Length: 304
Length: 304
DNA sequence: CTGAAAGCGCTTACAG
DNA sequence: CTGAAAGCGCTTACAG
Image 1 (cartoon, rainbow over the protein chains, first blue to last red):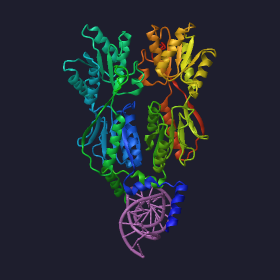
Image 2 (cartoon, each protein chain N blue to C red):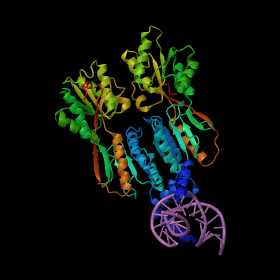
Image 3 (spheres, helix red, strand yellow):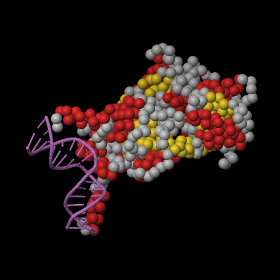
Image 4 (spheres, each protein chain N blue to C red):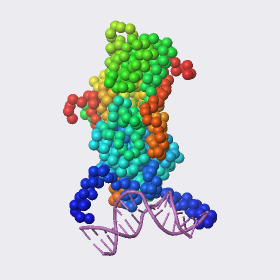
Protein backbone atom coordinates (compact mmCIF):
# COMPACT_ATOMS: atom_id res chain seq x y z
CA UNK A 1 0.00 0.00 0.00
CA UNK A 2 1.55 3.27 -1.07
CA UNK A 3 1.82 6.28 1.14
CA UNK A 4 -1.01 8.12 -0.53
CA UNK A 5 -3.27 5.08 -0.45
CA UNK A 6 -2.56 4.80 3.25
CA UNK A 7 -3.44 8.45 3.77
CA UNK A 8 -6.56 8.03 1.74
CA UNK A 9 -7.62 5.05 3.83
CA UNK A 10 -6.98 6.96 7.03
CA UNK A 11 -8.93 9.94 5.81
CA UNK A 12 -11.90 7.91 4.71
CA UNK A 13 -11.82 5.89 7.89
CA UNK A 14 -12.08 9.13 9.84
CA UNK A 15 -14.77 10.43 7.50
CA UNK A 16 -17.08 7.47 7.81
CA UNK A 17 -16.41 7.32 11.53
CA UNK A 18 -14.70 3.98 11.56
CA UNK A 19 -14.14 2.70 15.08
CA UNK A 20 -12.32 -0.52 15.84
CA UNK A 21 -14.47 -3.13 17.54
CA UNK A 22 -13.21 -3.31 21.11
CA UNK A 23 -14.58 -6.83 21.50
CA UNK A 24 -12.49 -8.16 18.65
CA UNK A 25 -9.47 -6.28 19.85
CA UNK A 26 -10.00 -7.54 23.37
CA UNK A 27 -10.12 -11.08 22.14
CA UNK A 28 -6.46 -11.19 21.34
CA UNK A 29 -5.05 -8.48 23.51
CA UNK A 30 -6.61 -10.17 26.55
CA UNK A 31 -7.67 -6.72 27.67
CA UNK A 32 -11.28 -5.64 27.61
CA UNK A 33 -10.68 -2.09 28.79
CA UNK A 34 -13.47 -2.48 31.26
CA UNK A 35 -13.43 -2.77 35.01
CA UNK A 36 -16.15 -3.60 37.47
CA UNK A 37 -17.14 -1.51 40.47
CA UNK A 38 -18.89 -3.54 43.13
CA UNK A 39 -20.62 -1.69 45.95
CA UNK A 40 -23.03 -2.30 48.79
CA UNK A 41 -23.61 1.40 49.45
CA UNK A 42 -27.27 1.91 48.65
CA UNK A 43 -27.44 5.67 48.94
CA UNK A 44 -24.34 6.11 46.86
CA UNK A 45 -23.01 8.67 49.27
CA UNK A 46 -19.60 7.05 49.20
CA UNK A 47 -19.84 5.21 45.92
CA UNK A 48 -20.72 8.10 43.64
CA UNK A 49 -17.73 10.28 44.43
CA UNK A 50 -15.45 7.24 44.33
CA UNK A 51 -16.98 6.24 40.99
CA UNK A 52 -16.48 9.76 39.66
CA UNK A 53 -12.80 9.58 40.57
CA UNK A 54 -12.33 6.16 39.02
CA UNK A 55 -14.07 7.19 35.85
CA UNK A 56 -12.14 10.42 35.72
CA UNK A 57 -8.82 8.62 35.98
CA UNK A 58 -9.65 5.80 33.59
CA UNK A 59 -11.59 7.48 30.82
CA UNK A 60 -8.29 8.74 29.41
CA UNK A 61 -7.09 5.17 29.23
CA UNK A 62 -10.20 4.11 27.33
CA UNK A 63 -11.50 2.11 30.26
CA UNK A 64 -15.23 1.96 31.04
CA UNK A 65 -16.77 0.98 34.34
CA UNK A 66 -19.51 -1.53 35.09
CA UNK A 67 -21.38 -0.47 38.20
CA UNK A 68 -22.89 -3.28 40.25
CA UNK A 69 -24.91 -2.45 43.35
CA UNK A 70 -25.25 -5.59 45.38
CA UNK A 71 -26.89 -4.53 48.63
CA UNK A 72 -26.09 -7.25 51.17
CA UNK A 73 -27.23 -10.12 48.99
CA UNK A 74 -24.53 -12.80 48.48
CA UNK A 75 -26.40 -14.48 45.62
CA UNK A 76 -26.83 -11.22 43.76
CA UNK A 77 -23.21 -10.33 44.39
CA UNK A 78 -22.12 -13.66 42.97
CA UNK A 79 -24.21 -13.19 39.85
CA UNK A 80 -22.76 -9.76 39.27
CA UNK A 81 -19.20 -10.96 39.77
CA UNK A 82 -19.76 -13.77 37.32
CA UNK A 83 -21.30 -11.44 34.78
CA UNK A 84 -18.23 -9.22 35.08
CA UNK A 85 -15.85 -12.15 34.71
CA UNK A 86 -17.76 -13.36 31.65
CA UNK A 87 -17.21 -9.96 30.18
CA UNK A 88 -13.49 -10.31 30.88
CA UNK A 89 -13.14 -7.25 33.06
CA UNK A 90 -9.52 -6.22 33.49
CA UNK A 91 -10.05 -5.77 37.21
CA UNK A 92 -12.53 -5.15 39.97
CA UNK A 93 -12.80 -2.41 42.55
CA UNK A 94 -14.79 -3.38 45.62
CA UNK A 95 -16.20 -0.55 47.68
CA UNK A 96 -18.26 -0.54 50.82
CA UNK A 97 -19.27 1.87 53.51
CA UNK A 98 -17.17 0.61 56.34
CA UNK A 99 -13.64 -0.59 56.72
CA UNK A 100 -14.35 -3.38 59.13
CA UNK A 101 -16.84 -5.26 57.02
CA UNK A 102 -16.37 -7.43 53.96
CA UNK A 103 -18.61 -7.47 50.95
CA UNK A 104 -20.90 -10.50 50.89
CA UNK A 105 -18.79 -12.22 48.24
CA UNK A 106 -15.30 -13.64 48.14
CA UNK A 107 -13.06 -11.96 45.59
CA UNK A 108 -9.78 -13.39 46.75
CA UNK A 109 -9.33 -16.15 44.18
CA UNK A 110 -10.36 -14.50 40.96
CA UNK A 111 -7.93 -14.39 38.12
CA UNK A 112 -8.34 -10.65 37.76
CA UNK A 113 -6.83 -8.03 40.06
CA UNK A 114 -9.03 -6.67 42.84
CA UNK A 115 -8.58 -3.39 44.70
CA UNK A 116 -10.59 -2.52 47.79
CA UNK A 117 -11.89 0.85 48.91
CA UNK A 118 -13.73 1.51 52.16
CA UNK A 119 -14.22 -2.17 52.80
CA UNK A 120 -12.10 -4.91 54.27
CA UNK A 121 -9.94 -6.57 51.65
CA UNK A 122 -8.44 -10.03 51.43
CA UNK A 123 -4.98 -10.38 52.94
CA UNK A 124 -2.23 -9.37 50.57
CA UNK A 125 -4.54 -7.04 48.69
CA UNK A 126 -4.44 -3.31 48.14
CA UNK A 127 -6.96 -1.32 50.15
CA UNK A 128 -7.68 2.39 50.00
CA UNK A 129 -9.20 4.30 52.87
CA UNK A 130 -9.21 7.79 54.24
CA UNK A 131 -7.03 8.69 57.18
CA UNK A 132 -9.76 9.02 59.80
CA UNK A 133 -7.32 9.82 62.57
CA UNK A 134 -5.79 12.66 60.61
CA UNK A 135 -9.24 13.92 59.61
CA UNK A 136 -10.37 13.94 63.22
CA UNK A 137 -7.20 15.75 64.20
CA UNK A 138 -7.90 18.45 61.61
CA UNK A 139 -11.35 18.98 63.09
CA UNK A 140 -10.29 19.07 66.72
CA UNK A 141 -7.23 21.21 66.09
CA UNK A 142 -9.46 23.68 64.30
CA UNK A 143 -11.73 23.86 67.35
CA UNK A 144 -8.68 24.30 69.56
CA UNK A 145 -7.29 27.00 67.35
CA UNK A 146 -10.55 28.91 67.71
CA UNK A 147 -10.09 28.81 71.46
CA UNK A 148 -12.54 26.02 72.25
CA UNK A 149 -11.56 24.23 75.44
CA UNK A 150 -14.63 22.31 76.59
CA UNK A 151 -14.89 19.85 73.73
CA UNK A 152 -17.25 16.93 73.29
CA UNK A 153 -17.32 14.27 70.58
CA UNK A 154 -20.77 13.08 69.49
CA UNK A 155 -20.40 10.16 67.14
CA UNK A 156 -21.76 6.91 65.71
CA UNK A 157 -21.73 3.33 66.99
CA UNK A 158 -18.57 2.33 68.82
CA UNK A 159 -18.36 -0.92 66.89
CA UNK A 160 -17.37 0.97 63.74
CA UNK A 161 -13.63 0.90 63.33
CA UNK A 162 -13.56 4.43 61.97
CA UNK A 163 -15.59 5.67 64.95
CA UNK A 164 -12.99 4.33 67.32
CA UNK A 165 -10.17 5.72 65.27
CA UNK A 166 -11.70 9.18 65.12
CA UNK A 167 -12.49 9.10 68.83
CA UNK A 168 -8.92 8.09 69.70
CA UNK A 169 -7.51 10.91 67.60
CA UNK A 170 -9.92 13.35 69.21
CA UNK A 171 -8.85 12.30 72.68
CA UNK A 172 -5.22 12.63 71.77
CA UNK A 173 -5.72 16.27 70.78
CA UNK A 174 -8.52 17.40 73.08
CA UNK A 175 -7.34 15.45 76.13
CA UNK A 176 -7.81 11.85 77.15
CA UNK A 177 -10.47 12.78 79.69
CA UNK A 178 -12.72 14.62 77.24
CA UNK A 179 -16.12 12.95 76.79
CA UNK A 180 -17.18 10.85 73.82
CA UNK A 181 -20.86 10.09 73.25
CA UNK A 182 -21.39 7.06 71.05
CA UNK A 183 -24.75 6.69 69.34
CA UNK A 184 -26.08 6.20 65.85
CA UNK A 185 -25.61 7.98 62.51
CA UNK A 186 -28.68 10.19 62.59
CA UNK A 187 -29.94 13.69 63.17
CA UNK A 188 -32.14 12.34 65.91
CA UNK A 189 -29.10 11.21 67.83
CA UNK A 190 -27.62 14.70 67.45
CA UNK A 191 -30.72 16.15 69.09
CA UNK A 192 -30.67 13.61 71.85
CA UNK A 193 -27.00 14.17 72.57
CA UNK A 194 -27.57 17.90 73.00
CA UNK A 195 -30.51 17.24 75.28
CA UNK A 196 -28.31 15.00 77.36
CA UNK A 197 -25.39 17.41 77.50
CA UNK A 198 -27.50 20.39 78.45
CA UNK A 199 -29.62 18.65 81.03
CA UNK A 200 -27.10 16.75 83.08
CA UNK A 201 -26.06 19.79 85.05
CA UNK A 202 -22.43 19.31 84.15
CA UNK A 203 -20.03 21.49 82.22
CA UNK A 204 -21.52 22.79 78.95
CA UNK A 205 -19.32 22.25 75.91
CA UNK A 206 -18.15 25.11 73.69
CA UNK A 207 -16.96 22.86 70.86
CA UNK A 208 -18.66 19.77 69.48
CA UNK A 209 -16.93 17.44 67.04
CA UNK A 210 -19.55 15.25 65.35
CA UNK A 211 -18.93 11.85 63.82
CA UNK A 212 -20.81 12.74 60.65
CA UNK A 213 -22.70 15.57 59.06
CA UNK A 214 -26.14 14.24 59.90
CA UNK A 215 -25.33 14.14 63.60
CA UNK A 216 -23.89 17.65 63.29
CA UNK A 217 -27.05 18.85 61.66
CA UNK A 218 -29.12 17.44 64.49
CA UNK A 219 -26.80 19.01 67.04
CA UNK A 220 -26.97 22.42 65.42
CA UNK A 221 -30.76 22.33 65.09
CA UNK A 222 -31.07 21.29 68.73
CA UNK A 223 -28.75 24.06 69.88
CA UNK A 224 -30.71 26.65 67.93
CA UNK A 225 -33.92 25.43 69.48
CA UNK A 226 -32.37 25.98 72.90
CA UNK A 227 -31.37 29.49 71.97
CA UNK A 228 -27.70 28.58 71.95
CA UNK A 229 -25.86 30.37 69.17
CA UNK A 230 -23.65 28.56 66.67
CA UNK A 231 -20.82 29.46 66.34
CA UNK A 232 -20.79 32.27 68.93
CA UNK A 233 -21.56 30.07 71.93
CA UNK A 234 -20.66 26.67 70.54
CA UNK A 235 -18.58 25.65 67.52
CA UNK A 236 -19.73 22.53 65.70
CA UNK A 237 -17.72 20.53 63.17
CA UNK A 238 -18.95 17.60 61.12
CA UNK A 239 -17.45 14.76 59.11
CA UNK A 240 -18.10 13.69 55.49
CA UNK A 241 -18.74 16.99 53.74
CA UNK A 242 -21.93 15.59 52.40
CA UNK A 243 -22.80 18.66 50.40
CA UNK A 244 -26.55 18.24 50.57
CA UNK A 245 -26.48 18.22 54.37
CA UNK A 246 -23.49 20.44 55.07
CA UNK A 247 -24.48 23.32 52.83
CA UNK A 248 -28.10 23.46 53.99
CA UNK A 249 -27.36 23.42 57.71
CA UNK A 250 -27.92 26.76 59.42
CA UNK A 251 -25.22 27.95 59.68
CA UNK A 252 -23.47 25.94 56.95
CA UNK A 253 -21.29 23.24 58.34
CA UNK A 254 -17.54 23.23 58.73
CA UNK A 255 -16.67 19.60 58.14
CA UNK A 256 -14.02 17.07 57.18
CA UNK A 257 -13.91 15.94 53.56
CA UNK A 258 -12.56 12.44 52.94
CA UNK A 259 -11.50 13.27 49.39
CA UNK A 260 -13.39 10.33 48.00
CA UNK A 261 -12.92 11.38 44.42
CA UNK A 262 -9.16 11.39 44.79
CA UNK A 263 -9.43 8.03 46.51
CA UNK A 264 -11.38 6.71 43.54
CA UNK A 265 -8.84 8.10 41.15
CA UNK A 266 -6.01 6.29 42.91
CA UNK A 267 -7.98 3.07 43.18
CA UNK A 268 -8.68 3.26 39.45
CA UNK A 269 -5.07 3.83 38.52
CA UNK A 270 -3.99 1.03 40.82
CA UNK A 271 -6.33 -1.56 39.39
CA UNK A 272 -5.19 -0.48 35.94
CA UNK A 273 -1.55 -0.92 36.92
CA UNK A 274 -2.28 -4.39 38.20
CA UNK A 275 -4.21 -5.21 35.02
CA UNK A 276 -1.19 -4.19 32.99
CA UNK A 277 0.95 -6.50 35.04
CA UNK A 278 2.84 -3.79 36.86
CA UNK A 279 3.58 -4.74 40.41
CA UNK A 280 1.88 -2.87 43.21
CA UNK A 281 2.84 -2.97 46.87
CA UNK A 282 0.01 -4.59 48.82
CA UNK A 283 -1.32 -3.00 51.99
CA UNK A 284 -3.59 -0.29 53.27
CA UNK A 285 -3.22 3.18 51.80
CA UNK A 286 -4.54 6.00 53.95
CA UNK A 287 -5.42 9.16 52.09
CA UNK A 288 -5.43 12.50 53.89
CA UNK A 289 -8.68 14.30 54.63
CA UNK A 290 -9.26 18.00 54.20
CA UNK A 291 -11.10 20.47 56.43
CA UNK A 292 -13.81 22.42 54.64
CA UNK A 293 -14.41 25.65 56.53
CA UNK A 294 -17.92 27.03 56.43
CA UNK A 295 -19.57 28.94 59.25
CA UNK A 296 -20.48 26.53 62.02
CA UNK A 297 -17.24 26.99 63.95
CA UNK A 298 -16.52 30.61 63.27
CA UNK A 299 -13.09 31.37 61.93
CA UNK A 300 -14.44 31.33 58.39
CA UNK A 301 -13.37 34.93 57.88
CA UNK A 302 -9.83 34.20 59.00
CA UNK A 303 -8.92 33.46 55.42
CA UNK A 304 -7.04 30.26 56.09
CA UNK B 1 -19.28 -37.61 20.84
CA UNK B 2 -21.17 -40.20 22.80
CA UNK B 3 -23.70 -39.33 25.40
CA UNK B 4 -21.46 -40.20 28.30
CA UNK B 5 -18.53 -38.26 26.86
CA UNK B 6 -20.83 -35.28 26.54
CA UNK B 7 -21.92 -35.61 30.15
CA UNK B 8 -18.34 -35.95 31.25
CA UNK B 9 -17.36 -32.82 29.38
CA UNK B 10 -20.23 -30.92 30.93
CA UNK B 11 -19.36 -32.13 34.39
CA UNK B 12 -15.70 -31.23 34.08
CA UNK B 13 -16.56 -27.90 32.55
CA UNK B 14 -18.66 -27.15 35.61
CA UNK B 15 -15.95 -28.47 37.93
CA UNK B 16 -13.15 -26.34 36.61
CA UNK B 17 -15.48 -23.37 36.42
CA UNK B 18 -15.42 -22.95 32.71
CA UNK B 19 -17.12 -19.76 31.60
CA UNK B 20 -17.54 -18.85 27.96
CA UNK B 21 -15.75 -15.69 26.94
CA UNK B 22 -18.45 -13.10 26.38
CA UNK B 23 -16.17 -11.07 24.13
CA UNK B 24 -15.75 -13.95 21.72
CA UNK B 25 -19.40 -14.75 21.86
CA UNK B 26 -20.31 -11.13 21.29
CA UNK B 27 -18.12 -11.01 18.25
CA UNK B 28 -20.41 -13.17 16.22
CA UNK B 29 -23.72 -12.73 17.93
CA UNK B 30 -23.41 -8.98 17.53
CA UNK B 31 -24.59 -8.68 21.08
CA UNK B 32 -22.28 -7.60 23.86
CA UNK B 33 -24.80 -7.99 26.67
CA UNK B 34 -23.82 -4.59 27.93
CA UNK B 35 -25.68 -1.32 27.92
CA UNK B 36 -24.56 2.18 28.80
CA UNK B 37 -26.23 4.48 31.28
CA UNK B 38 -25.46 8.13 30.65
CA UNK B 39 -26.37 10.66 33.30
CA UNK B 40 -25.78 14.26 34.23
CA UNK B 41 -27.23 13.90 37.71
CA UNK B 42 -24.28 14.55 39.99
CA UNK B 43 -25.85 13.67 43.31
CA UNK B 44 -27.29 10.48 41.94
CA UNK B 45 -30.60 11.18 43.60
CA UNK B 46 -32.44 10.23 40.44
CA UNK B 47 -29.79 8.10 38.78
CA UNK B 48 -29.15 5.61 41.55
CA UNK B 49 -32.70 4.34 41.91
CA UNK B 50 -33.10 4.28 38.13
CA UNK B 51 -29.81 2.40 37.85
CA UNK B 52 -30.96 -0.07 40.51
CA UNK B 53 -34.10 -0.75 38.52
CA UNK B 54 -32.24 -1.19 35.24
CA UNK B 55 -29.73 -3.51 36.81
CA UNK B 56 -32.45 -5.45 38.57
CA UNK B 57 -34.32 -6.01 35.33
CA UNK B 58 -31.30 -6.81 33.19
CA UNK B 59 -29.11 -8.92 35.43
CA UNK B 60 -31.39 -11.88 34.71
CA UNK B 61 -30.71 -11.40 31.03
CA UNK B 62 -26.97 -11.38 31.60
CA UNK B 63 -26.69 -7.72 30.76
CA UNK B 64 -24.21 -5.48 32.61
CA UNK B 65 -24.37 -1.70 32.79
CA UNK B 66 -21.66 0.88 32.12
CA UNK B 67 -22.31 3.96 34.22
CA UNK B 68 -21.07 7.23 32.74
CA UNK B 69 -21.51 10.45 34.71
CA UNK B 70 -21.00 13.31 32.34
CA UNK B 71 -21.88 16.43 34.32
CA UNK B 72 -22.66 19.14 31.76
CA UNK B 73 -19.50 18.65 29.76
CA UNK B 74 -20.17 17.96 26.04
CA UNK B 75 -16.60 16.83 25.37
CA UNK B 76 -16.66 14.38 28.26
CA UNK B 77 -20.06 13.15 27.18
CA UNK B 78 -18.77 12.54 23.68
CA UNK B 79 -15.78 10.59 24.94
CA UNK B 80 -17.99 8.39 27.08
CA UNK B 81 -20.42 7.74 24.25
CA UNK B 82 -17.58 6.77 21.97
CA UNK B 83 -16.08 4.49 24.58
CA UNK B 84 -19.45 2.79 24.91
CA UNK B 85 -19.84 2.41 21.16
CA UNK B 86 -16.33 0.96 20.89
CA UNK B 87 -17.39 -1.60 23.43
CA UNK B 88 -20.39 -2.43 21.24
CA UNK B 89 -23.04 -1.68 23.83
CA UNK B 90 -26.40 -3.12 22.86
CA UNK B 91 -28.11 0.13 23.77
CA UNK B 92 -27.92 3.32 25.76
CA UNK B 93 -30.19 4.75 28.41
CA UNK B 94 -29.88 8.50 28.82
CA UNK B 95 -31.05 9.94 32.11
CA UNK B 96 -31.14 13.48 33.39
CA UNK B 97 -32.77 15.41 36.14
CA UNK B 98 -35.28 17.38 34.18
CA UNK B 99 -37.64 16.60 31.35
CA UNK B 100 -37.19 19.83 29.52
CA UNK B 101 -33.45 19.67 29.06
CA UNK B 102 -31.33 17.57 26.77
CA UNK B 103 -28.08 15.93 27.70
CA UNK B 104 -25.07 17.79 26.28
CA UNK B 105 -24.58 15.21 23.55
CA UNK B 106 -26.55 14.13 20.50
CA UNK B 107 -27.61 10.49 20.62
CA UNK B 108 -30.08 10.58 17.79
CA UNK B 109 -27.96 9.08 15.03
CA UNK B 110 -26.21 6.24 16.75
CA UNK B 111 -26.63 2.77 15.39
CA UNK B 112 -27.66 1.44 18.77
CA UNK B 113 -31.06 1.96 20.37
CA UNK B 114 -31.41 4.80 22.86
CA UNK B 115 -34.05 5.14 25.54
CA UNK B 116 -34.51 8.33 27.54
CA UNK B 117 -35.51 8.77 31.16
CA UNK B 118 -36.05 12.09 32.89
CA UNK B 119 -34.51 14.00 30.05
CA UNK B 120 -35.72 15.26 26.72
CA UNK B 121 -35.33 12.67 24.00
CA UNK B 122 -34.89 12.93 20.27
CA UNK B 123 -38.11 12.92 18.28
CA UNK B 124 -39.39 9.45 17.55
CA UNK B 125 -37.63 8.04 20.61
CA UNK B 126 -38.97 6.34 23.70
CA UNK B 127 -38.94 8.48 26.84
CA UNK B 128 -39.87 7.45 30.37
CA UNK B 129 -41.00 9.92 32.98
CA UNK B 130 -43.15 9.99 36.05
CA UNK B 131 -46.67 11.31 35.88
CA UNK B 132 -46.11 14.56 37.74
CA UNK B 133 -49.71 15.66 37.35
CA UNK B 134 -51.03 12.45 38.83
CA UNK B 135 -48.45 12.63 41.63
CA UNK B 136 -49.46 16.17 42.48
CA UNK B 137 -53.11 15.12 42.45
CA UNK B 138 -52.35 12.34 44.94
CA UNK B 139 -50.76 14.86 47.27
CA UNK B 140 -53.47 17.48 47.05
CA UNK B 141 -56.31 15.00 47.25
CA UNK B 142 -54.74 13.63 50.39
CA UNK B 143 -54.69 17.10 51.93
CA UNK B 144 -58.31 17.60 50.88
CA UNK B 145 -59.33 14.27 52.31
CA UNK B 146 -57.85 15.32 55.65
CA UNK B 147 -60.10 18.36 55.56
CA UNK B 148 -57.52 20.93 54.52
CA UNK B 149 -59.16 23.82 52.69
CA UNK B 150 -56.66 26.68 52.72
CA UNK B 151 -53.98 25.14 50.57
CA UNK B 152 -50.76 26.65 49.27
CA UNK B 153 -48.22 25.23 46.86
CA UNK B 154 -44.58 26.10 47.56
CA UNK B 155 -42.43 24.88 44.72
CA UNK B 156 -39.34 25.26 42.56
CA UNK B 157 -38.53 27.48 39.59
CA UNK B 158 -41.43 28.05 37.21
CA UNK B 159 -39.25 27.36 34.19
CA UNK B 160 -39.12 23.65 35.09
CA UNK B 161 -41.68 21.77 33.07
CA UNK B 162 -42.50 19.46 35.96
CA UNK B 163 -43.03 22.44 38.26
CA UNK B 164 -45.65 23.82 35.92
CA UNK B 165 -47.29 20.46 35.51
CA UNK B 166 -47.49 19.87 39.26
CA UNK B 167 -48.78 23.39 39.82
CA UNK B 168 -51.48 22.97 37.20
CA UNK B 169 -52.64 19.69 38.72
CA UNK B 170 -52.66 21.29 42.17
CA UNK B 171 -54.82 24.15 40.95
CA UNK B 172 -57.22 21.76 39.29
CA UNK B 173 -57.81 19.96 42.58
CA UNK B 174 -57.40 22.74 45.15
CA UNK B 175 -59.03 25.46 43.08
CA UNK B 176 -57.72 27.68 40.33
CA UNK B 177 -57.42 30.65 42.67
CA UNK B 178 -55.24 28.90 45.22
CA UNK B 179 -51.79 30.46 45.55
CA UNK B 180 -48.57 29.04 44.10
CA UNK B 181 -45.22 30.30 45.32
CA UNK B 182 -42.43 29.60 42.84
CA UNK B 183 -38.88 29.66 44.18
CA UNK B 184 -35.86 27.37 44.20
CA UNK B 185 -35.23 23.77 45.23
CA UNK B 186 -33.88 24.42 48.72
CA UNK B 187 -34.67 24.30 52.40
CA UNK B 188 -33.90 27.99 52.59
CA UNK B 189 -36.71 28.72 50.17
CA UNK B 190 -39.07 26.68 52.36
CA UNK B 191 -38.19 28.90 55.31
CA UNK B 192 -38.60 32.03 53.30
CA UNK B 193 -41.96 30.95 51.92
CA UNK B 194 -43.30 30.37 55.43
CA UNK B 195 -42.00 33.75 56.54
CA UNK B 196 -43.79 35.33 53.62
CA UNK B 197 -47.06 33.46 54.17
CA UNK B 198 -47.19 34.20 57.88
CA UNK B 199 -46.22 37.85 57.67
CA UNK B 200 -48.37 39.15 54.86
CA UNK B 201 -51.44 39.47 57.03
CA UNK B 202 -53.49 37.34 54.68
CA UNK B 203 -55.17 34.00 55.20
CA UNK B 204 -52.95 31.40 56.85
CA UNK B 205 -52.78 28.05 55.06
CA UNK B 206 -53.68 24.77 56.74
CA UNK B 207 -52.20 22.58 54.01
CA UNK B 208 -48.91 23.08 52.17
CA UNK B 209 -47.98 21.04 49.14
CA UNK B 210 -44.25 21.38 48.50
CA UNK B 211 -42.50 20.89 45.18
CA UNK B 212 -39.83 18.68 46.69
CA UNK B 213 -38.75 17.20 50.00
CA UNK B 214 -36.07 19.76 50.67
CA UNK B 215 -38.55 22.61 50.44
CA UNK B 216 -40.93 20.64 52.64
CA UNK B 217 -38.20 20.17 55.20
CA UNK B 218 -37.54 23.91 55.26
CA UNK B 219 -41.25 24.63 55.57
CA UNK B 220 -41.70 22.22 58.46
CA UNK B 221 -38.64 23.53 60.31
CA UNK B 222 -39.87 27.10 59.83
CA UNK B 223 -43.35 26.23 61.07
CA UNK B 224 -41.93 24.56 64.17
CA UNK B 225 -39.82 27.60 64.88
CA UNK B 226 -42.98 29.71 64.78
CA UNK B 227 -44.73 27.39 67.19
CA UNK B 228 -47.08 26.12 64.52
CA UNK B 229 -47.77 22.43 64.91
CA UNK B 230 -47.36 19.96 62.06
CA UNK B 231 -49.68 18.21 61.33
CA UNK B 232 -52.21 19.50 63.89
CA UNK B 233 -52.27 23.11 62.61
CA UNK B 234 -50.82 22.63 59.15
CA UNK B 235 -50.39 19.52 57.01
CA UNK B 236 -47.30 19.42 54.82
CA UNK B 237 -46.68 17.08 51.91
CA UNK B 238 -43.48 16.77 49.90
CA UNK B 239 -42.39 15.33 46.57
CA UNK B 240 -39.57 12.86 45.76
CA UNK B 241 -39.55 10.57 48.79
CA UNK B 242 -35.87 11.19 49.15
CA UNK B 243 -35.46 8.87 52.08
CA UNK B 244 -32.58 10.71 53.68
CA UNK B 245 -34.59 13.93 53.88
CA UNK B 246 -38.12 12.58 54.26
CA UNK B 247 -37.41 10.16 57.08
CA UNK B 248 -35.36 12.60 59.16
CA UNK B 249 -37.82 15.49 58.98
CA UNK B 250 -39.68 16.12 62.24
CA UNK B 251 -42.32 14.83 61.88
CA UNK B 252 -41.37 12.41 59.07
CA UNK B 253 -42.62 13.57 55.73
CA UNK B 254 -45.62 12.36 53.81
CA UNK B 255 -44.46 12.64 50.23
CA UNK B 256 -44.90 11.53 46.63
CA UNK B 257 -42.64 8.75 45.37
CA UNK B 258 -41.87 8.78 41.66
CA UNK B 259 -41.17 5.05 41.56
CA UNK B 260 -37.82 5.58 39.95
CA UNK B 261 -36.76 2.00 40.37
CA UNK B 262 -39.78 0.76 38.45
CA UNK B 263 -39.06 3.41 35.85
CA UNK B 264 -35.52 2.11 35.53
CA UNK B 265 -36.77 -1.44 35.24
CA UNK B 266 -39.04 -0.52 32.35
CA UNK B 267 -36.39 1.55 30.64
CA UNK B 268 -34.00 -1.40 30.91
CA UNK B 269 -36.47 -3.88 29.47
CA UNK B 270 -37.32 -1.47 26.68
CA UNK B 271 -33.75 -0.90 25.58
CA UNK B 272 -33.28 -4.66 25.68
CA UNK B 273 -36.34 -5.19 23.49
CA UNK B 274 -35.00 -2.67 21.00
CA UNK B 275 -31.58 -4.33 21.07
CA UNK B 276 -33.23 -7.64 20.24
CA UNK B 277 -34.94 -6.05 17.30
CA UNK B 278 -38.41 -6.13 18.76
CA UNK B 279 -40.40 -3.08 17.81
CA UNK B 280 -41.34 -0.60 20.48
CA UNK B 281 -43.91 2.15 20.13
CA UNK B 282 -42.12 5.51 20.35
CA UNK B 283 -43.44 8.25 22.60
CA UNK B 284 -43.51 9.42 26.18
CA UNK B 285 -44.48 6.90 28.84
CA UNK B 286 -45.75 8.38 32.06
CA UNK B 287 -45.44 6.16 35.11
CA UNK B 288 -47.76 6.63 38.06
CA UNK B 289 -46.45 8.03 41.34
CA UNK B 290 -47.32 6.71 44.77
CA UNK B 291 -48.11 8.59 47.97
CA UNK B 292 -45.96 7.57 50.92
CA UNK B 293 -47.82 8.39 54.09
CA UNK B 294 -45.71 9.32 57.09
CA UNK B 295 -46.74 11.82 59.76
CA UNK B 296 -46.49 15.33 58.37
CA UNK B 297 -50.10 15.48 57.21
CA UNK B 298 -51.80 13.45 59.88
CA UNK B 299 -53.99 10.65 58.66
CA UNK B 300 -51.14 8.20 59.08
CA UNK B 301 -53.16 6.18 61.57
CA UNK B 302 -56.08 5.89 59.20
CA UNK B 303 -54.60 2.72 57.82
CA UNK B 304 -55.14 3.54 54.20
C1' DC C 1 -26.93 -37.21 15.14
C1' DT C 2 -21.75 -36.01 14.89
C1' DG C 3 -17.69 -33.50 13.80
C1' DA C 4 -14.91 -30.40 11.09
C1' DA C 5 -14.81 -25.97 8.95
C1' DA C 6 -15.82 -21.23 8.36
C1' DG C 7 -16.01 -16.81 10.23
C1' DC C 8 -17.15 -12.72 13.77
C1' DG C 9 -13.29 -8.14 13.54
C1' DC C 10 -9.38 -7.37 14.81
C1' DT C 11 -3.74 -7.64 15.64
C1' DT C 12 0.59 -9.78 15.44
C1' DA C 13 4.21 -12.33 13.59
C1' DC C 14 6.06 -13.76 9.49
C1' DA C 15 7.27 -14.52 4.67
C1' DG C 16 8.22 -12.04 0.49
C1' DC D 1 8.61 -1.83 3.83
C1' DT D 2 4.36 -4.57 2.23
C1' DG D 3 0.85 -7.97 2.24
C1' DA D 4 -1.12 -12.39 3.31
C1' DA D 5 -1.85 -15.67 6.93
C1' DA D 6 -2.69 -17.25 11.45
C1' DG D 7 -5.27 -16.95 15.50
C1' DC D 8 -7.93 -14.77 19.82
C1' DG D 9 -12.57 -18.02 21.75
C1' DC D 10 -16.47 -18.75 20.50
C1' DT D 11 -21.07 -20.24 17.45
C1' DT D 12 -23.38 -21.47 13.37
C1' DA D 13 -24.15 -23.70 9.19
C1' DC D 14 -22.89 -27.53 6.71
C1' DA D 15 -21.05 -31.92 5.08
C1' DG D 16 -20.68 -36.68 6.39
